Each structure stands twice: as C-alpha cells, then as structure tokens.
Image (cartoon, rainbow over all chains, first blue to last red; front, side):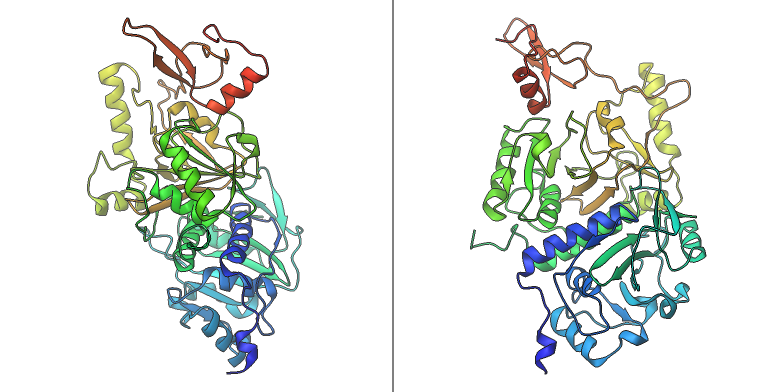
Amino acid sequence: MSLQVLDGGMTSPATDAAFAFRALMNVMARPGQIEQISQATGPAPLSTAAATVLLTLCDADTRLYLAPSFQTNEIQDWLAFHTGAPMSDPDEAVFALGHWAELLPLHRFPVGTPEYPDRSTTLIVEMDDLSQTGAILRGPGIQTQTALNLPDKQAFQDNAKAFPLGLDFIFTSDQSVAALPRTTEVS
Amino acid sequence: MTEYNFAYLDEQTKRMIRRAILKGLAIPGYQVPFASREMPMPYGWGTGGVQISAATLTPEDTFKVIDQGADDTTNAVSIRKFFEHTANVATTTKTAEATVIQTRHRIPEDPLTDEQILVYQVPIPEPLRFLEPRETETRKMHALEDYGLMHVKLYEDISRHGHIATAYAYPVRIEERYVMDPSPTPKFDNPKMEMAAIQLFGAGREQRIYALPPYTKVVSLDFEDHPFDPSKAPHPCALCNAEDAYLDEVITDDEGARMFVCSDTDYCEARREAGHVGKDAI
C-alpha cells in the first residue's frame, strides 16, 4: 500500500465532517448556492470538494458507483481505506461519482419507489467550474429564483417531473460545491 | 469532553443521520426512515431532535433549546447541558444569537434568518397514524397521495364542534404533495413555517427524519367555507403586553384567577427589557 493511499483524509474527522456536512446541507437546502469545502484531498482527477463529499457521506453502508474516468486503482484504494464503501453498478448505487457525460444515461440509477422515494441515487457530478449563471432555478429552498451553470436542462426537467421519485445531484469543482434536489424546477 | 466523540454520537451514526437529512431536504415532507440510536435520555425526551442536533452541530455554533417556548424547563436545560458537555458548543437563550435551535413544540416569535437551523423534537411523525394504525397502509396512502381520510377527520370536527377543533399538530400540505405533521406545535405557529431557516424534524422512537428547505410552501389543510384560523387566546401578554405572541394560561391561585403570558420566554423578556409593561407585571 503506497503512502498516497493513506494521505488526504480529514485531520480531525469529527469536526471536519461536521463543517463539511453543514456546507452540504446548506447547498442541498438552497439549490444554486455555492459553498467551499476542502476538508479532504484524494488522488487526481478527484476534486477536493468531491473527495470531501465522499468522506463526509460514504461508508461501508453506501454502495458507490465510479464512472470510468474515476475507476483508477489510486482512487479505489484511497476510497477503500478512508470510507470502506463497496463499489457497485449504477443500478444499486447509493452514490455515484463522475463527469456528466459518463454518468449518462441517468435511467440506469434507481429513483426510489413510491413508498420509499428516498431510496434513490445521489449523483456527485464533477464540473469544470461552478457559477450562478445559466439555467434558472425555482422551487423549495429558493425565495424567488436563482441560477446555476447546469450541464444540461432537459435531464433535470425530466427528473423533476417524476417527483417524489427522482435523483438528487451534488456538483463539485475544485473546492466548490452546489446541489440540485429533485424538487427544483429548471428553465 | 475527552470521554466523548464530538457531539456524543459516533461518526458512522452521524453519517447515516446526515444522509437521511439530505434525502429529507430533497423530498420535503416525506418521512425518511433512519436507524435511531439509544441516547442517554428516555424516548419522549427529544431523542430524535438530539440526534439531528448531534449530526448538525459544528464547534462554531451557538445552541438554544426551548421547551414549549421556554429556555428554563427541565427538558430544555438538560439538552442544552448535554451539548455543552459533549460538543463544547456555546449556548444561549436569545433567539437572535442562536445558530441552531432545538425546539419542543414551538416556533420562536422572532422571525428566523437564513443563518439559523430549527430542529424539532417529534413524538408521532405520521399525521395519519391516529386515523390508520398500520404503517404499511399509511405508507401506501402517502405513495398514492390518498389524503381523503384526513379531510374526513377535519370535516368530522366541523360537524361535531362547528369548527375545526384541532388546535395543535394541525396537518399541513407541503409543496402540494406530502401531508406532514408539524409536530405538536400550536396551529398558531403553522403560518411561520414558510421561513428563511432550514427546518429539520426528528422522531427518535419512531425512527423518522423529515425536513423543510427554506421558503418551502406549507399550507394548513382547511375547507373553503371553514378557512384555516391560526387562533390564540384573545388577550395581550400579562407581563409584556404583546398582542402578537402565543400565550400560555397560568393559574395563579385556588380561586380560579389566571393570567396569560407569552410562551416564548426570550421574546417576553426582551420586550420587558425594552420597556413594555403588561397589566400584571411587577
């Protein structure tokens, strides 16, 4: 096991995870809002924000799907050591990580059932950058409207139509994180 | 402090609770099952709220706990002390200074801001439970949006009492989808639920977490000819003269004398400090 596998974890796991989760909760509760998280760093091409999300939310109870460009030995070893999350196919994933293009088509991921709509995948989408421009967002968590540079519009509109079923998205880029739950109306 | 992990719970438990909170925010009003833990206090003492607070608090937070609006009752004091001891967080009784407020059955009178989080302790999270005891059935009713039974219950109130007699735990509809129990808050507080703060609900014994993002649409169920009425006792506060606050009725002697005072102790104290005087103020 190389030293790199052991590196990059949270220096103070309890409080680091608490701060990271607060940022995650804020962005999930307020779609379009961008926060900074940098409590963990993983092997390239994993962004600091995505590494922090994974270490904050994943453990042996969460099956994780890695898109092809993240299926490297370094990343898999790093996640195995720091989270213990079992790798899975898209159809059983609790979390999925990848660039937008390689996560498509989205229908491979579970959207929950009418009785248990929470049993759906949360997708962590690595982006080139995040900014409050582009697609207009409305819905719970947004007072009037806001904007986020989503990688697509149609996919999120289709996802919202299935409410209360659907996927939830966390967008990461460098140290920035934003989110889009299934409730948000995209135009 | 050193005997405990930060905020008492172990990290795996907090991750599980945090995942449930995120799904709850993504599906407002839907009750997310979670593996509630034994806490060092009995069920019914706010173990659901305590677990959510434990998973939410950071060392930089200022924590406030209220029990029926009061900061100085047993439940509020013991939970505040619990997190002073296990999370070493600052605590306050002032609503405006708090970043995380755990509450048992009231929403503070002062409007909350987007810097604050309100954590509710919930005894029975299922609004349909007293109408249909089977979890398998209520789950199906939520899935099918089958809420006719709840309207029948409110209608029976009207036919029996002439008005909707439900005064607390008054059911609300979230974003035109899920019917949700606002926990046994007085219905006076229902209109405040469309707020700038994040609202998290935890039921420890029943193992459910649900949530409302800021500005989520919350509608109290009613009928066109019997619109929702967030009523309160028709008095000003006897101590601070507030006309707009929810009041508790306090019996003051054996002859039936009584006074009406703000249930939100911080609100009442702040008003008295500002010079407002009620008729029974000393």
